[in-house]
Image 1 (cartoon, one colour):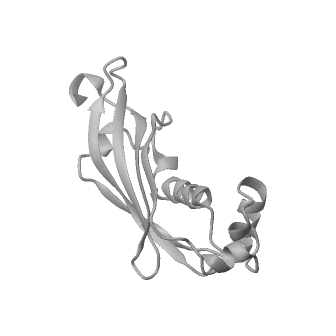
Image 2 (cartoon, one colour):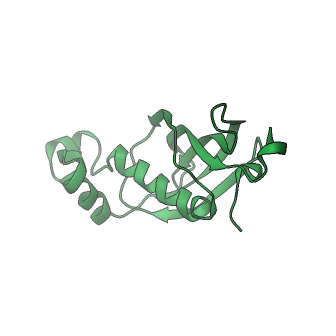
Image 3 (cartoon, helix red, strand yellow):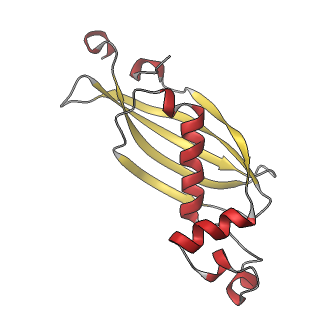
Length: 152
């Protein structure tokens, strides 16, 4: 089944499967995209100042993207995204953390310029194994409308 705009009612929530984070993936991502010492070297002075190796916030965003794909996006008539309104990194993500979370539809509407396109606003909440919030993201998704004449 391919989800369309009609399949994303206001308040709809989906839970993401847990994902374990390793030091190797933290270092590999950071080495390529965000090579600050607290992301790449657990023995660095910067890492000691923050309590050890921590994942880049952009790595955490990439993990969220994978969770979205696995949970619903690959089965959706997605037409991309209108962007993010807010990204908040609330706690560092560390090796050994197990991340999970939710996506919740907080707004939805039909595009004014293209009635075959629905705009769905999501709030994403990512938590670690101690139920601490590590990241919150608010963003838009664009999704095909199955029945434009009745969706509005």
